[in-house]
Image (tube, rainbow, N blue to C red; front, side, top):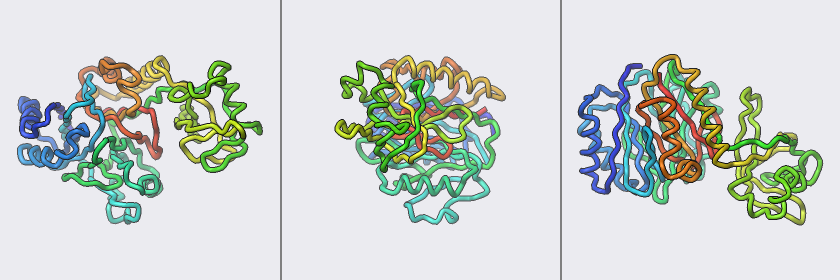
Length: 366
């Protein structure tokens, strides 16, 4: 891998002006880039094809990947509620692009097995077959470490793979992950008690530790919330510990309802009897503390100066959890310095072979 990482950002609905602003930001450094990452807010979803076409015409960059988000980000800055684009040009090698059109795709025909070491992928949550296709990809490439995010939009959810497409999954695979450091932040704090699911059905938890599930939940959250379960929405979540994790990692899932008569809890994922479960709080202090933990871990693992970065963060994070002044991105900037960074706010975040929620996934190139 080489040294060049250059970013540009621009706002506005006029495509020609927006592209000119992007090009102007790239111009002083010049470029020998091989790969471009391009993210736009969903207000530009219908213009993405034209934006990409003009960039391809005016920049000698061979390959492009990217997608659409309800918010986008770059070094120290978050952008929402306006037509905006961010791009990062990189001089990387040893990679291959791929896309999976649907759940019936033959992965041997679309993926180069020789390039299965590290992958940056974008997923389409509006495609019915996404969960199955993502699982097939993970099973096909068990040794590949994936990072990425699911497109988020009030309109179309296109992706970029040298042209604008709408597959289930697309992205770039690298043969070598040397110099790439990845970590994630959950933004939640787990409560002290860990339980075992002793009776369940699909996404319904009937018993925890051989007791009615709702009784256990009320004890964990305390008397105030137990008396008014409507207050737990957006504050208390289910945490599903990741098996064999040496970092106490867990998947955060929404609590989507209670059956008061039968003491049942419904969560936003399927569960199995015998699996562990804990409840988690999500608040600003927890998010800041865990973000700082992640950034310190990233810094401790860097083998050299960071040269570029990608950040995929949950829609529920950003301004919704850290405030309106780009605080989440400024924390990264303060920790890493003026490292070229781009990314977007996703409808689900990908790390390794798992789909997360309420998570920020940071990838740093050194």
